[in-house]
Length: 113
Length: 116
Image (cartoon, rainbow over all chains, first blue to last red; front, side, top):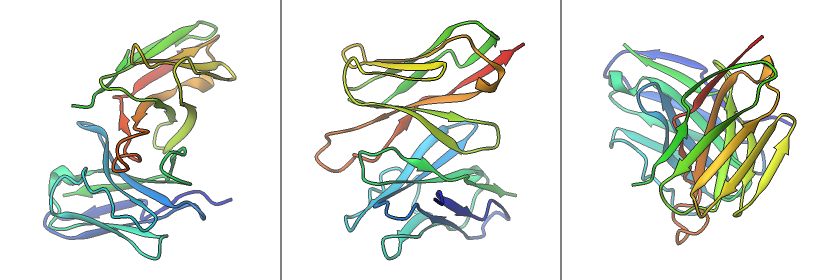
């Protein structure tokens, strides 16, 4: 079956622009997660969604970051007024429930010039 | 503060040798994950360890969990080149009042290189 799908795979943007990153989870998975991977900070949790519960946003680094999940499926991570320190690989994962293994997508490599 | 620390961060091995990667975490957890990442690729799940004393094996890799010592190990037996990758451990919460179940805290990663 299809795995977690992320788009775009690469995104180059100018400082100050807004970007949207998309994640399509595995069908039937109720939980969806966003992580960020960078050389300086390693793998960091950003946010997760579980069913109809309020998302856990505790990992979002600033109010420039937001995410939504529509219809319990596809999620979009939005970064407003991008900064150079936002450059990283943004990874999406999904799982059947919050205690299950998290399956990761290939990531979106964001470069802010 | 939640911390997950791996040791070593870099590991160069000869084919056929054995070695162990260590993963220490700072607060109680009964869920410990091991992932593998190849260069330019995403994370692939290797093991989930759910209780004290849990041991899981797949091929040349064996993972164990000691919740009292807050330590997990990933043992490599008779290494082969195909095992070259970065290995991450990650700690999850299983009982946090329903507010933090899904949040994984990752170690720094161990870059493993297996030489002929």
